[in-house]
Length: 168
Length: 83
Image (cartoon, rainbow over all chains, first blue to last red; front, side, top):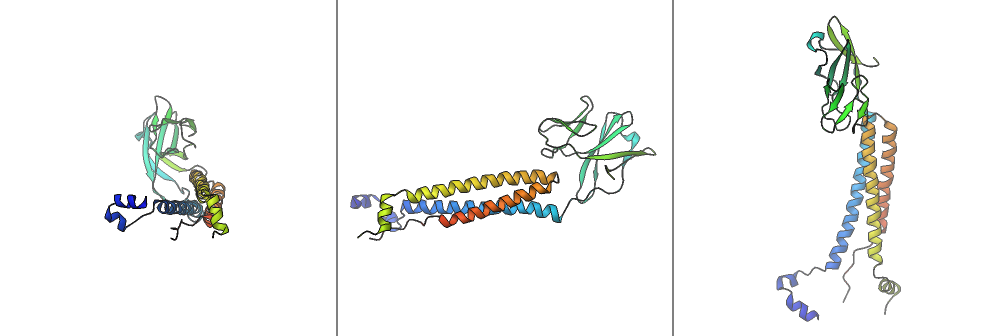
């Protein structure tokens, strides 16, 4: 039998014989080792999150930041601004009317899409996955966002809109 | 003349394969749980919930050690039988 099968195998293959059984066993060993490596990498990733949180905590917003003039944002409109800190964060200033002003982080807590204020709905909308937030508290009303929008305190002083951290 | 190992191998020809499959299935399970931990830790780190991140990291490290420990039982590659 072996003589017959050898006759069918081309000469170049006879010179470099590969036993299939041996080859597949080695490949499964390699796969197991690769999974171990992946497992190690995931452990390193999880540890890196903890190290980053402890070693480089996010700096809270300090001080007061003038945004714009009160007259620049009509009732029911919103105004986008950024605050430079340890990183630049975009915020959304909303004039709800009746001297009610709110400022929220503009990044949706789901996948960081830019949210916008819809005065016709009376809600903040994330257009990516139809998440809705309460424009007064920032709480999630509907959709996939897991957390409320981070909020800043708004102060009106001499016609100037000023924001600061909520507990400052 | 056959020795004990040879007769064992002839009686249970799939033993190596079963062992290998078991190890790979366990490792896939470990990696899946670790991905779940990582996802949870990322989500919670964003909310400044450090305790969850620490617990997930410890769990992930434990699974990584378990994966390395499993390699002890990895069967040797099949060697070509001597003629």
